[in-house]
Each structure stands twice: as C-alpha cells, then as structure tokens.
Image (cartoon, rainbow over all chains, first blue to last red; front, side, top):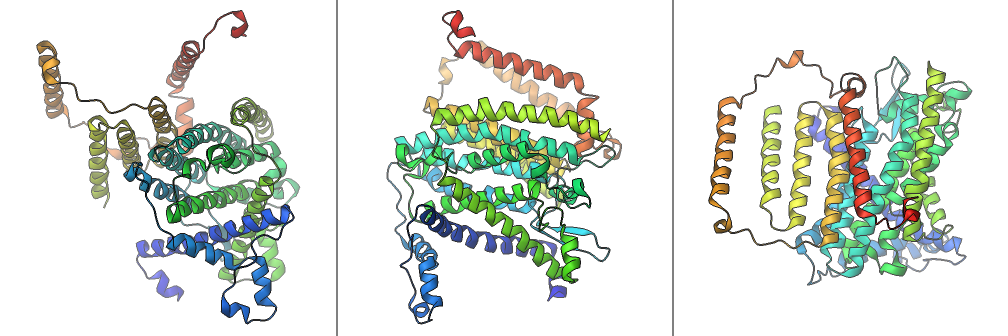
Length: 381
Length: 171
C-alpha cells in the first residue's frame, strides 16, 4: 500500500494528500456547526437540537436515542437541507461577483492548510519530522498572506448584493480585518525573534517553533503561551476579529445588519460562507496551537518523543497518527473556547471594535514587541 | 516547466494589467489589479524569491487593493463614458503618439537587459535572513527615507481629513 503510494507521480501524491486534508476539514467544519448549536444550548441551559433521527438508528437500543439527544443527525439534516434548497439568485445583484464571493471565501481557507503542519513522526535517527502538505520555510508569512485574501469574499459579497445591510457589513468587514491584521502580525514577531537566534539559518516555519517547545529542561519545554502570554492574548483577540467571531462579528451582526454581508445569500452559497468561517477558525486555532500551545506535544514539559518512549510505540505511522490526534484535540478545544467566548462576552459596538484595535491592541503589541526585543537581545547575546 | 510557467504568469500579468486600465467598472479594474499582483507573485515564485512573493501578496493584494475596493465602494463611482478623441488638443495627441513611439522604440532597441550570470547574483530574495540583512545594511538609508516619506503622507492625510477648528482639536 505504502510502496504503491510512493511510486505515484509527485503531483498525484500531492493531490491525494490535499484531498485527504480537505476530506477531514469539511466534515469537521460541518460537525463544528452542530457543536456550536449544542454548546450554545448547554451554556444557555436548554436542550438544543435533539429531534432528528434516521429510522435505522432508532432500532439500536440506547445508542440510537443517545445520539438523537446529542443532535448528531441534525448535521446530516442541515447538510441535506442546504444542498437541496432552491439556490435563489436575487434579481438586483451583480451576478458574477455574487456567485464568485462564496467561492473566494473557500479558497484562502483551504489554501492556508498547505503551510500548516498538523503532526509529526520520528524517523530512524529519532528526529521529529513534521507532517504537512508543504513544509515551507516561510510558513507563517504564507499563512498570513493567503489568509489576508479572505477579505475579498466579504467585500465582494457585500458589494455585489446591491442592498443596504450587506453593503454595510462588507465595509465593516474590510475595515475590521485590515485593522486587526496589524496587531496580529506584530504579536508574533517577538516569538520569531526568539526562534531565530543568532548564528542560525533564519526561518518563519512552524516546525522550528514547535521544536523549541519540546526541548528538555524547564525553559526548553515551556510552551510559548507561558513565556509570552501577552503575545498569545493579542494573537487570540486578533484571531477572533479576523474570523468574524463574536464579540467581533460586526460584519454579520444580526441585531443591526439582519445578516450582514450574507443577507442575500441562501442555500449552498450561504453554506460555503459558513464552512469557510469554520475552516478559518480551524486553521487559526491550528496556527495558535503551533505557535503558543506546543503543537503536537501532549502536555507542557512532556514532548512527543517522551510520550512515545513511555508508550513504547515505534511505528512511524502510529506515532504520526498519535501526534495528529493530539494536535486535532488541541484545535478542537480551542474551537470550544471560541464558542464559549461567544456566549460569554457580549458583542462590541463598532466604534469599540475600532478603538480596541487601534488604541488598545496596537500600542500593546508595539510595547510587547519592544520589551521582548530588548529582553531577547540581552538573553541571546 | 519553468519557462512555461514563466510565460503563463507573464501573459497573465500583462493581460490583467491591461484590464486595469480598460475596464469601465472600477470594481472590475481593482479586481484586475489584484489578479495582476497575484501574477507578479507567481513570477517571483518562479525566481525562487518566495519571501518577496508572499510579502507582495500580504501587503499589496491583502491590504492595499482591499483598501482600494473599500474606497471605490464608499465613493460609489460609476464607470464613466470614455473621453471623446475629438475633445483632445492636437498637441496632446501628437505628444502621446510620440511618447508611445519613443517607448516602443527604446524597448526594441535596448529591451534586452544585459543581465549578469544568474549564479553571480546574490540570492537575497530567497532567504529571510539574507533579505533582512541587506535591508538593515546595504539598503538602510532607502528604507529610512521611505519610512519618512510615508510618515509625511500620513501626517498630510490627517491634516487634510480632520478639521481643526480651535486649539482644543489639536490636542
């Protein structure tokens, strides 16, 4: 099986790997939409979706009703509804950009995956080799660059809809995304200053960041969230704004903008926006995990290699699977955190969003950068 | 493979760049500009200057064209009729034709750059460290001057866009 795979053309190999990752991200995004409804229900003290069930599942005792109460089948019901609904195209829209916008929404979300390593295995020499679609040296810049193109889907959707509320949503989104990109980029600079110590080949890749979080010793094994808590906080806040999540969901705040930029969308085109939002969250959480939460290392001060030693697993495939499971668990925990915040912090007003972005986060990230730059210069020289 | 990709990206860049000035709808023009920038980024990747390619995407495609679109939508500019040729003075027409002629002639005469051997050119765009090193040593003065120019532009925008009525507003 593996020999057959290795004999394929590199292009076919790449395509297969890409398809495999997409096949994982799409269902996770779908399940996340369900989890969102269920988690919000639990936080608000109501049962949440618990009715849909397919007949054959109802015949299974205990497990069937349990899954029904968990709302598992609503995922299928929702997906089916979105696929088979009438895909209406309002008469007053700019048709080309109206159809293009949801497609553009998906593209950056799925392209950024290529640069994010999601696991690792140990080769014969015992070195940790990251698993990624493309192990690029400038990983983080690539992710930021491609992710920044996501703003076009929102702007174009708002503009092409040719009506008041979507347009306001689009304008808000473009201003918000550009404002928070600054603090987001500035917040990770201290981290990469620390990673690129003198005398080393410069890198912006994630592999080295995770490597530094899995060294032995107290400071070597510490995750960067403990070493650079302010950076982590700024990055997380900016991530909420970049993914249009509450409390920063200005572009689609339903209380004042009906639905914001996707007011005029329905059926599968709306579904694409939805999946794109969750893919953005998944990838953003993945980047956060790699940068601040130790990537595929199970616990702080316990790197993957130690855990593998304890368990006695040697097969690279099993180690790879183990690391992927650890990584995905962390990412899903962060997704839960996103949902938790959604029902904890009320939505900001638009002027507050701008004030937080420009007058609070940006000066804070600049100060943080200067302080850490001085500290790193003192320690590393 | 490399030459084919180069040709594809070069044609793509030129066609979309022409689109920027030909499109009547300003939004189409801005989207053409975006595609053109993506084409240039592709050319950079072909030259193994991955860092420059992604920086171009990050700064220009990700932020600046988005701001262009933002402004276009705020001003709600409708595409205007093309200016009639008859309304242009004869002198301007002659000058325009002469300029285009001079441009084409110089392109034909000296268009082929006398480029040095690729192996001898320092590969500063490919590696983050080399690039940063050059930026802080060889090109330090241009970077500082550019930063100062941008600061002036920013101050100008603030002065022009904000109304200062009394000393209270200046604070």
